[in-house]
Length: 148
Image (cartoon, rainbow, N blue to C red):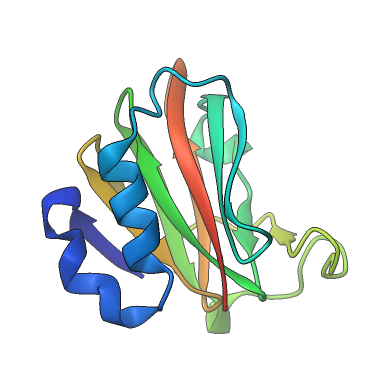
């Protein structure tokens, strides 16, 4: 997992060939004003889910894991609490891994929590179980899917 400031995004371009395209797009477009939904940059290889999400308390937010994609979380409107736990420390998921949705959910709590603020981003890989969008109220954020 990586937590960094948007102003330093260029430092992470080498981690995946599509990260430069992603961060350049986010820098040059005001996504705070577009309708919620999918913004496709490169088919199913790179896309942004613009979401207006209701933040939930820690005990209501499940951990999630993906295999085919890494996520890049970019809050736009407010800070959120974000839970993390390495997948090696997770017992069985609540249900079998959903290949079509590229997701498994876990009821176990995160082992670490941090605050993700506007102006920052978080990259999570398949080994990073994560529980985003913890808090009160609603949040506009970008959840980017980058195919591995």
